[in-house]
Image (tube, rainbow, N blue to C red):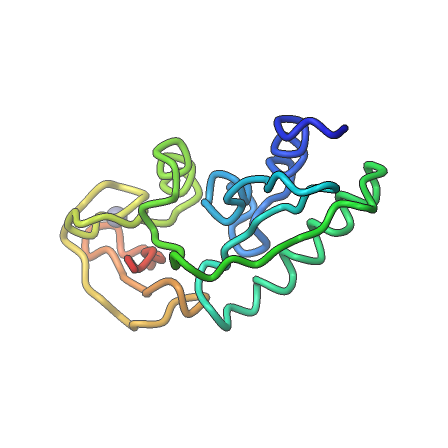
Length: 148
Ligand SMILES: [Zn+2]
């Protein structure tokens, strides 16, 4: 019998392919483990059509196989849809350190100098889930996680 806590710990070793400082549990992609036998890892993609979703499934598969859990499945759960509210508070701090303004209804603020004197450059940053802003004080461009 596989312990679901162990499985979640294993999942927490997988970093988001786009944001290598945050793991997929902190990001809210891994929703839990179901109670079927053998169990399935339940995942909700950050949004439908996100190219990282397929990559994340593959990374989970590899991780499970490498740990000898080849019998454990991966189940996509599209409802309820993933929202940025599922990103943990600890992960918000990591995002900021990494240089991404975390999601939330705060005024966009520069993750480097903290200034709120910023402008939106593009609705699409390095990935479609982020918008590109620039700081008018330190002139650094930065990504901001879009809320949804
Ligand atoms: Zn700045």
